[in-house]
Image (tube, rainbow, N blue to C red; front, side, top):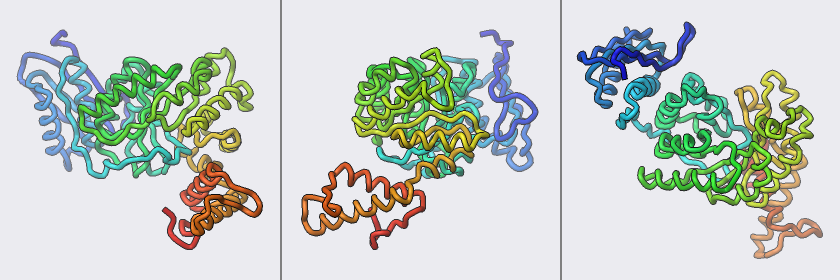
Length: 407
């Protein structure tokens, strides 16, 4: 490393907000810290203290560090600082961890609704802070396709710090890792820091899921994590689709299968169309594999943010095929997705009759549920209960519709 080389981290340009730019120039001279901030009058002293403590944690005592702050939150400053120092000293092992906020410690469940999951680039903290206010079922902090190759390291620190600090308004927190070894290395930055679910991209075999599962197990044991980390493999190729059942069965921590149609159609050498004839087989395979293993089926994103009618049609088609949810690339898509996945009046009425019949059978000690002259199988009752749970969650049906509070 040349002592005259200047290392940088953070965005450039004249429209930066909720972020910062940092530079570090290694030298043999005693450390000099320069801070420029738009909020220096109010927070200058606390910002300097934050920076000096972080540099001390990393063992930096020489060189020149410059921070240009544009309203970045402390966890963002810490992430940018750690990025630039580790670009200068790649073998440095120390970490600058923000305090683990108590409000960020909440869990999730296997059957959590995943109608909508909002993708957020892992290198853009300004989009993370208020993402949960739009109330998707989950947010995805993306370390893969949304992050340029040169920003992969920065995204890891930002995502780690966001997981430790933000509550995301209580929505489920997912992270999409990278492919291969880089993805396995990503796990060290998220598993000990309260991620709920990991999306595994471009899965083509059970072995890929096993590798992620084993790495998570090792990291959980080392960090003392007790809560499971759920998995959502993404199928994005012809081979992945043909191995859908094998992949779905690969881990007890799988809670969903997702499909990525941009890469899938490219793999087939065809174009993705609105009609979706080219992906009907793949989507049907994925739904059947998910249903066979009792996990959720999640559809691909709809890429035209301005076309609400097209989105509505796409979600309706996904629901008809048996999908449980769809990806979002913009907050405005969330409302439409939730509306279309909500059960219809007829579906709710039928579900209420089935659940009421099941309740009556249980009260009278009957082992068989009957609706009129028709016997109702347990899977039908379970599906009806899920329909009502979804209707209650959407606000269509009151939680006490049976006259008592439902569990």
